[in-house]
Length: 486
Ligand SMILES: *[C@@H]1O[C@H](CO)[C@@H](O)[C@H](O)[C@H]1NC(C)=O
Ligand SMILES: *[C@@H]1O[C@H](CO)[C@@H](O)[C@H](O)[C@H]1NC(C)=O
Ligand SMILES: *[C@@H]1O[C@H](CO)[C@@H](O)[C@H](O)[C@H]1NC(C)=O
Image (cartoon, rainbow, N blue to C red; front, side, top):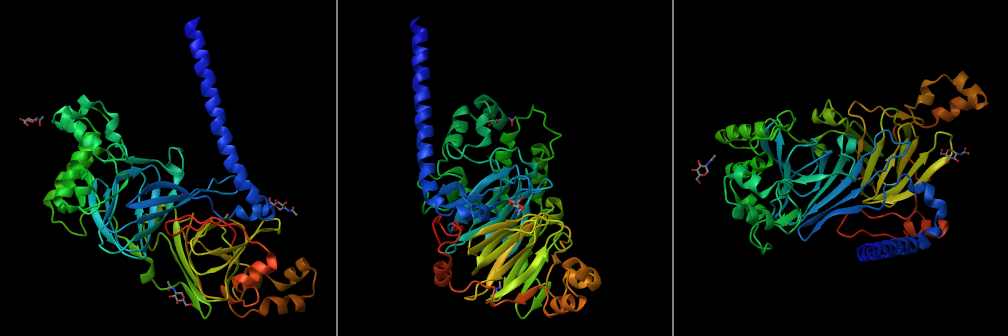
């Protein structure tokens, strides 16, 4: 039958195309692997460096990249790390996400509008601020500054996610790109819900094509869309605007009242909100917390560290995530330690150094050189240490998968668990004399952060010459992803 033959032909063509696509994919893979073969020995090390960041958003106005942690058996709770860059005068259009985010303002200033407990509040965040965005809460991010880029590092906690990719954005605003979630409704439903003509709805739903991050103001936006005008509105109008978008969301005769982020309820509260005095403190949304304003929990001549937990910043409790910041002086090391209750994710903010991680069976899991922008993770229970290069301080920031006080257990140093354990027992365990064990565990007078000139990686050239190669890492800062040998 002619029809059948046509179908068969179509099928063959499709198969061929799929094969071609797969073939191309493989080819690319092999190219990559050809390079990788050389460093097969480092494969294992790469387990603990989050690599292959995926660009999830790229527009002229900014981008967002995500380093995904696939987890596997040794992650108790996988977390992804996101990097958002926004050019001056830009807006990340309102959306909600199926994961909760903890934002850390790396540089620049941000304005975050968040619908929290049915009210919209806008916060100004500056460098060092930590702010939580709960899963399912609508929010926007804005870089309203004239001459300053905004860099944000965020944790993306997928524990409430739909499991589609790293996370799923639901854009409230949009057009052809990004597509607004409203676009999924029937035109008639929308025009009825909005009480405007179908043409008006169509116009509104097709204008935006600049992507999820857009320029605001007139300068760079040829097709002024709904959202490019958004920031110029006064706060009251912004609320009104968001309200209208949200109204779309829920045609009046649909019942979704039970949902926690009930748009209906939200509408009412926004209307209520409009009568209130505007200002920074509007809404019940918790304030941000600045990490640089805090005093270190620990400090000595070799560096300092601080940890932020739910007692310092209550919103962390909802995420079950803690935040920390460490600054090691050149050549110092964080003494070998273990996190008994949390997996740790770290992002190198400044400097370079080494991360050593040990498997539970006492073999080395990783000894990788890291530098600014690298992201590493350390599974719960795995002993590890960070060592700053001799060339300068090593500053790293990160998240732990526990909002409760994370009490690292130090294996070496004046406060180590070896000090706490009795020396007769240790002597028996190590099979050496008690005198010997006492001498060894008492020799280090410092605790937590130790001087370590000999263990610190020397200059980079020297290192490369000595070891020929070090693990391939991907730079995570800046606009471009840099891959290759170090
Ligand atoms: C719809 O709009 C018309 C006029 O534009 C107005 O008279 C009418 O009351 C509106 N209906 C609703 C339900 O808001
Ligand atoms: C980290 O320490 C270095 C000096 O060792 C200092 O220059 C730098 O400003 C510190 N970083 C922070 C964030 O305090
Ligand atoms: C130690 O554990 C790791 C991870 O499970 C494994 O890859 C390695 O082969 C083990 N080494 C020894 C000596 O058992």
